[in-house]
Amino acid sequence: MISVLQPGMFTTVQDLGREGFGPMGVSPSGAADAMSLRVGNLLVGNVPSAAGLEMTLLGGTFLFPEGATVSLAGSDFGATLDGAAVGMWTPLELRPGQTLQVGATRGGARCYLCVRGGISVEPFLGSASTHVLSGLGGFNGRALQKGDVLAVGKQRQISWSKRLSGAALAMLAPRTILRVTPGPQLHWFDMPAQELFEEGVYRVTEEANRMGLRLAGPAITRSNSRELISEGVALGAVQIPESGQPIILFVEQQTAGGYPKIANVISADFHSLGQLRPRDEMLFEMVSFETARKLFIVQEALLASEGLFT
Image 1 (cartoon, helix red, strand yellow):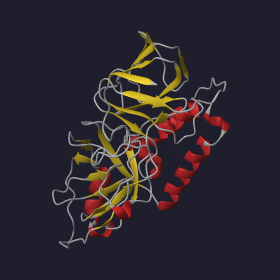
Image 2 (cartoon, rainbow, N blue to C red; image 1 turned 135 degrees about the vertical axis):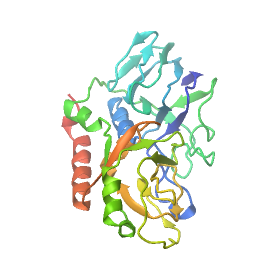
Image 3 (cartoon, one colour; image 1 turned 180 degrees about the vertical axis):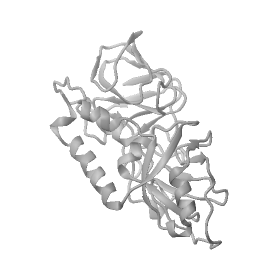
Image 4 (tube, helix red, strand yellow; image 1 turned 120 degrees about the vertical axis):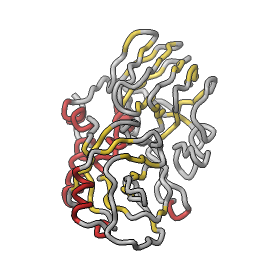
């Protein structure tokens, strides 16, 4: 089990989300940086989809009464084990009664705590993910609180001492230039507006959350005044509301929307999207659908290869 001594700023149970319920109005939720969660799970011998803890900006303090094998993935939050500094991206063997303290971010937005056996909670629509806006899934449908006690799933008895390879660490390094493919309403914006979208520097505002990232920067204007009938939207869609300030839809997005979509962040860059913090600056780079597919295939191939570890 895991005893929560301090929950941190915003810590939730997350896995890879619940797909296929968009028609019911339920967004996938899941880890904001799914790549880090997947790799963190592999480091402790779990299946990639096992549930872990997602910590945002400031981590928590956790007591392991029975010991555990854990890993920290994502951004470095300066963790310590009984006061001694511990590293990222490597299995950590905790003795019974040890305390892991995860501090404030030193870089990106999110750090993941994975434990061998995974976090055990009652699934909702087939997933352990916490959907915060609806109060469903995860641990009582909410962020963790002081005094919570989490169950850990059945642990496999395996010997594991792997570290990430240099190629994997390079792949996981967050990008500040997000690659995007053309959106379904790209033609609603003239060439000067499209160039401004690609050349402009945007800042993540304080309103960013798991539902979407509101950006501040050059305003993008439409070349027509047409109204868009609400339609289904995808993770990573870049909407342009009347203000002209882009909104990137995120893991707890609404499942339909009426703003035109100029672009969509590619799947291979979703992990970078999940590590953006308020006040971070970023740019967009338009790529072809073929390039997006190739980048995704390369990323997945590395995750499935022996080259992931040293």
